[in-house]
Amino acid sequence: MVGNGRLQSVSNETQYPVTPPSSNGLPSLQTDFHHGPDQTAGRLLGKRGRDDYGGQEDASLRTKAKRNRRTPRPNVRRMSEEARQKKKEQWRKRAVERRKEHEDVVELDKRPSEFFHFPTDNVKVRRALRRNHSYTKKCELPVFEQGRDDTKDIILFCPPPSKKEEQEVLASLCRLTDEKMETLKPQVVADLQKISVSSNVLIRISKAIQLGPLDILLEQYKKLVHMGFVSYEKNKNRSDTPALHAGVWRRYSSTPCIVSEVWQKRAPPEKIEALSALIRDICKFFKLRILPKVLLVIQQYFPEFFKLQRIIADEIGEIEGIAEYPEFNLGGPFSTFAMKIGSSEHMHLDHFDPKLFLVPTVVLAGGNFSGAELKVPQLGGRMPIKPGMLAAANMRTLAHGSSEHTGERLAITIFLDNPLLISALQNATRIL
Image (cartoon, rainbow, N blue to C red; front, side, top):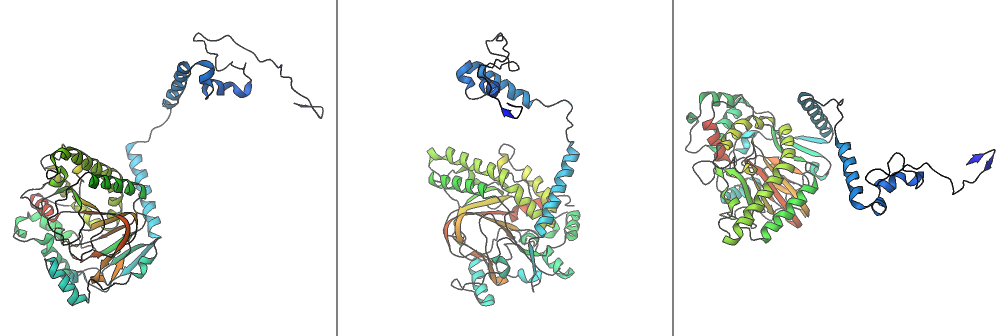
């Protein structure tokens, strides 16, 4: 204590007021000064309080204090649902504005109709690439100059299509084979004609997905492979490494259904239940942590694609068993995703994806690797896709593959199954 310009000592014998203990044998918090002012609350609620007053009583006090802190104050105004949605929309617009500051937009000297004349067989695709684009497996395409900057979002787009080109796109809608446009209701055809063709050919978004969730998915997939996962892929025209497919499609059946691979019925009987449970957990995590961020990006760069979301969601909702297993329902406009360790090193087209130019396929990468750039001979280059990045393009019209890579790479592909889209269009009464 300072007084009269001189430091005066304080006696250790200083007395503080003491009150009798309460009914439970513990001193009152307001008057517990017999340990000195610097140890009052610490003795009662701190680590040493357990030793001085007994563990059970002290723990109950701490629990009570925490419960009181969690009790909402009656006068606090809660945000209404309308205000909350308005706030979310403001955040989304700010995110879009910030993203545009890092965009590099490149106009291609191609027309949309130039991407619609590739054959349907992947062997013929590779022949066409060698003939029309001077491409061979050993040929190294140059890296897109814009793609060298990992902080930039790259947008490659075509000039707006002419009316004739839009009609050509509509005629080749969904790669209709034996199905004819007459099978669609007049209002659906009219709505399709109002949907303009997307000009974005290929996008590459940096920092689209956090690395943490991708690392978790990588570990879960490695665990799945270690347990004896059985892939149902019938051919190796894309890659030599197997992949997990999950979600819904109409690829090998007359009606849309849950992808049979998720049930793992070809695995040893003693492993079926554990493998299927782990796949369901992977799907739940994917829907919760990955898919929402993908949809935000795709909605910004392929807005016309989202006009199909309602009819896709309605079609998925009618699938048998989907109500019991909602983790397989991506909710539209995407229906299915694939996951693997490695890359699709063979040049190919995704023939079960829609040929409609506004429908993108999304590619994500995770892990720790170098290389594995997305090669696109029709565009004359390859695009680096590093962990956390997102690439999207119509993979039915752009032949593509991956360059060699080193390290451990998780590849995720998210797409809309073409036969399921055909079924949704045939069952829909309108789109818009």
